[in-house]
Length: 409
Image 1 (cartoon, rainbow, N blue to C red):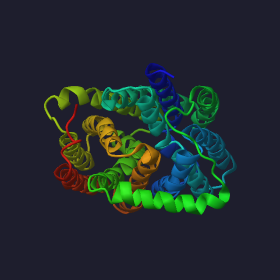
Image 2: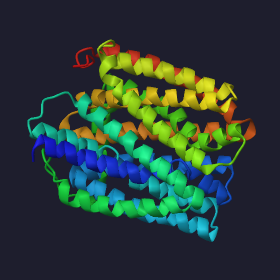
Image 3: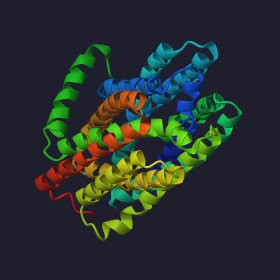
Image 4: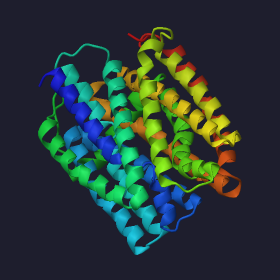
């Protein structure tokens, strides 16, 4: 399997997966509030999703590193199909908050089968094919495709949601079906040898993952601060994303669902813009940690400003600039982590990083969701934005400990 075919397959899977996922991103909060939940309950259900992601990251990493990355993706798609339709059933039947909570946990399980596995498949397959170009190019193009899929999905989801808020969920489930067949036929294991996973060996595999997570992850002086920085940045990112849908409409003063869809699409464009800035900025800032510190500082300033200001158009503009900063950091961080991880442990360590990010999401949505309900969403944004500054010294620590792989090729 040639490098071009591998990259095209990766782009196709990434694009279709994120198109399906993004259909509900602009309307999820409104959908749940329409089903009878308040803003804190909505954020708690999202925290349950994030908690599920955190709890299942390591076990699903075991699946990806034993039976294979394709099997992991297929399990993801089956779980997402079922849980997405259960969301619709909960709203239709009026089963309420706790039903959303439990299904959200299993939705998190489905998503963890995806995180780490597809990136690990790409990196190992490219190495096996003899590909020797910088991975930033592939990851940045992948992030641009993610942004494009998000653009199409969120606009489509907003327009469909204006008709009826549950339609985007049904369409999302339908899109998972062709993606399942794409993964089944076009994602062979290349550069990785799957192993049988017997149930009696699961505890031993979990211990192995735990030891490898310590050895190659938390005990690694470079990877450890980067993972903690993931926790810091996601504590605002997830809370901010799920709360702006209500926050921005409150600032606008009108309940227009399609406006949220358009803003979600613009967020997708802002991510693309950030991805596109990686190459030119890396000619000025020559280190990966330098780019990450610059992005973290910009994120903090912009998030605080969004919380303090009250003009709808100005706040939306600043939030889109925040999206540019996120889009700038994503491919650089992906490449930086992959440069420090051995092939056999790649999916496990990437899943461990996602677990840290999920932990930040749970913490952020729980704490800042309470602040949003008792004070205001803007107040919660301002305070949570300040915490983003903590990522800067963490990236600085990583830079101090390893300059060899910090330089951008």
